[in-house]
Length: 223
Image (cartoon, rainbow, N blue to C red; front, top):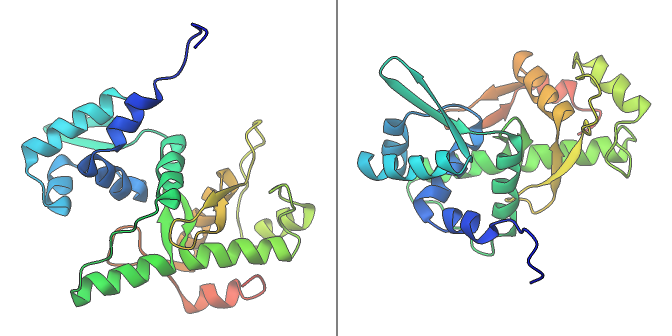
């Protein structure tokens, strides 16, 4: 090495190399805040163990915590962290299969069909929507919204965020489909609009989404 400053990639990688911490981050890709008790219950890990891991993730800047009275909430720090976790998941050569119980298999199929990836749409539906917008000319080869794309977004009631130097759209590799779905501020606004209109409905599992009959009809042109 030439003695210049370098990022501590190994330290960050070591944080994610622990299965419990990695599972916490994947669980929090729903974009919501969790309590340590909820994480302990969902991951079947003891509360003291969860607390220890949360301290490390918060200290590293991957999670942020908020306190309301006696309650402590943690969530992913920002979209960049969510993007890193989703990208690593897509590059994972091994996928732990779902449990054999009926409920676990049902939830797994539903999450693969449509789910939230932090604040945007993922799964088969997210990939299909991305494909439709690209083939229809609403999203060009550089992943930018075209004029017809802006018209399409406006037509279904999406208020696009103001231009801020950050691309409105970008590709995000889907870890179940191994193909791109749409991410970025415009994709976040799209998911918020689709759920507000009832075109996408929340399922019983965290991150699970279901396309309603109204949503299927409204998106038929690009699906």
